[in-house]
View 1 (cartoon, rainbow, N blue to C red):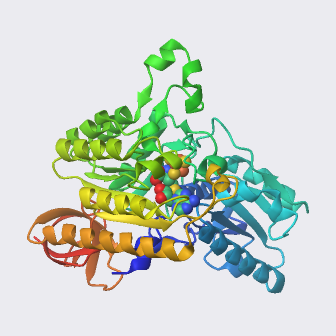
View 2: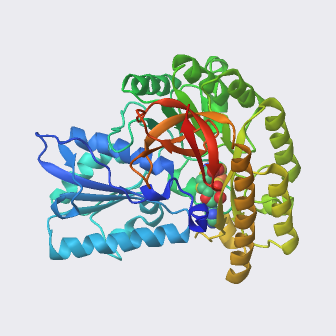
View 3: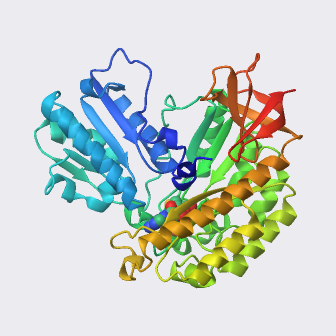
Length: 481
Ligand code: SAH
Ligand code: F3S
């Protein structure tokens, strides 16, 4: 098993830094090159940016040397993510200096928000800096740069959801798509930079979400993932930040739509579409959501439920809003209410003040839940977060050893789950060809398990019943029946 794969989450590793491609546009006059790093939300945002710029006459290019505009959509979640982006910026600048002097270099997303003018003034690395809520302003900012000025807009919004912008989808596999339902986060987990880089939590109009899903079905898509930092906190009451719900009229409050209502509406509106969602926050996930999952065949039986630690003391220091017992109760409810639902998690090891005892509680919680997948990280201090005021007191060597222990445990649980699936048959949605062999197809089950099987006459987008014959801890291998 590739341990690196387990450590670095943030979506499929192979997609990190991928450039977005659109069909050739014969009328376009300028070419853009967009690279995305970080979470699924960033990839989804890049599709919005591409949509805005396509209307401005831009087309995409795979060749950075011929780009008029190079954008990097950035991630600030851990130090390592920021270092990767800095290296890329240096690379773009070398190209600009040596080969393509007219090229505009722009930073989008979370690092733009976190570092703001620093990029423009001190480091002179870029021409344009734009935060995640300001993408509508891109055409103006590009004009400013064309006029010879540096341009910046990092204003965060309480309302912006880009609800009316139809993202361009041509960079994906044509089978699965992301649909964002909330932006920002109000949770203030002490380790996390997201509330600072993405601002207040706001929910998107359910009608625009449903229409986007219907359009995806018409375009041949078979699966959507509803996206938000904390999807269970979704609440539509006519617009605005979630925190302002109490100020809304009584009528608006009565007509409000929560996450369970939204799931139900999407599942009914698109019965042939597979539905996933990410990410659930244990402090907000309700029994109603679990019931709705049970009610609809087309909602995948898989919940990503980041826990971060198995110790109530550490969870309190992280301000996660639940303790070990409350988390276990939620897990028990899921296991009781949904006969066969896969569970996955995020875990942080070596948070400030984490003792060996706390670490053992994390390991014992993992033994209790037995997650199918996990994304595990060493704590990385982020400037200006509440946890940055605490001492980052766990030595690197200890963090690494604890991380290895939880990865090893997760690997054995994953393998156990995979082995239990041998001899059973699952419906697999085919997403493409296996990376290792042209003769095999790759897809996923409702539980989000990866499956490869012989291609025969099947193709991307097909739902195929696959009998599982063998496995690794990451992939099931089978044959179509
Ligand atoms: N709202 C999302 C969190 C997005 S960040 C959610 O609840 O899943 C994705 C993951 O990165 C988090 O769950 C956490 O495990 C990890 N993470 C966030 N900040 C971190 C930090 N400062 N150091 C290490 N890992 C971090
Ligand atoms: Fe971060 Fe916690 Fe929100 S992990 S994105 S502050 S739920």
